[in-house]
Length: 135
Image 1 (cartoon, rainbow, N blue to C red):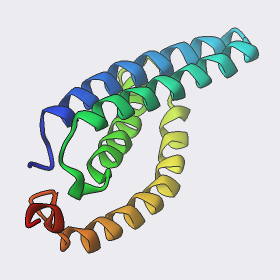
Image 2 (cartoon, rainbow, N blue to C red):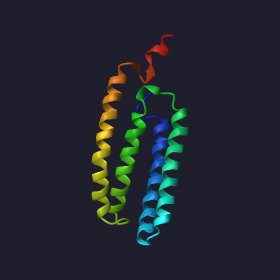
Image 3 (cartoon, one colour):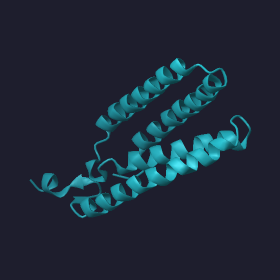
Image 4 (cartoon, helix red, strand yellow):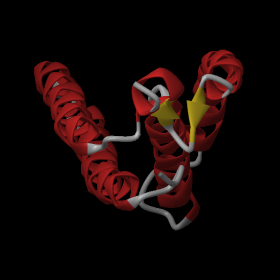
């Protein structure tokens, strides 16, 4: 019933591991000019992220958030990991600028999702659909 629940925390933990691994491997492959490996790595990363969200999201019974809590968690993790890795020296500094530029456009989509979440929140009680509760 909480916006941040055990499913979100589990998802965030897995997302941190996936994103950190992806960013470090991506940088290694960029240095070695392994462009085919980058494509394969990106596909595996996207698939792992999608499957993780799908499996954990199915167990999460709180439907009133319409996935906004997962979207926000993904945004925060995907912004903080490369910036953190660049800050501590594991990635070059240009990753910070690239991450922030992606974050601006992604933030627009996140804002739209937040507005839809606020509109739909009126249709639920603590994350549960009102019509399902009172039937």
